[in-house]
Amino acid sequence: MAKVKNVRPGILIIADAGLKLGPGEVVDISPLTAQAEKAIENGLLARVDAEPESKPRVRTAAKTDEQTRQPGAQGPAEQKSDSQPAKVDSGVKNGAG
Image 1: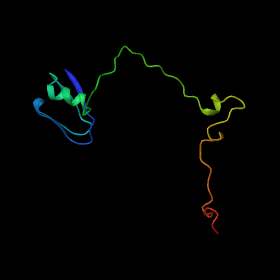
Image 2: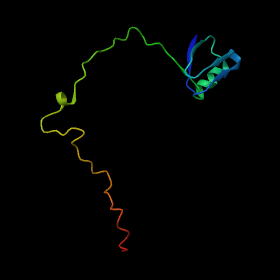
Image 3: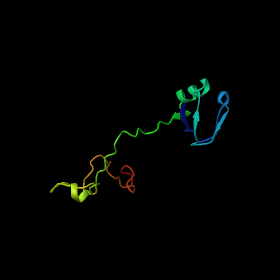
Image 4: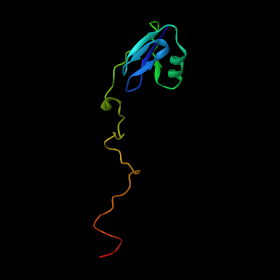
């Protein structure tokens, strides 16, 4: 048995499985049909795997920028970006008066 999700913004019909899936709808297909496999290959369907229960989730406290910032380091708002183009005065037209 396979669990699949319609990732398209519209309705998806898998005729050989007798399915009509709405946008974002998840269903179990047993057995996985030829058209369903082709839809997965083409990116119309995505396999949805259940998260393994044996995998422990690690909880970490999120630190704010002030706590993680080193003394003397600039924050994102304080950094200067040299990659932005210089602004051009729109009143000047190639030296023509």
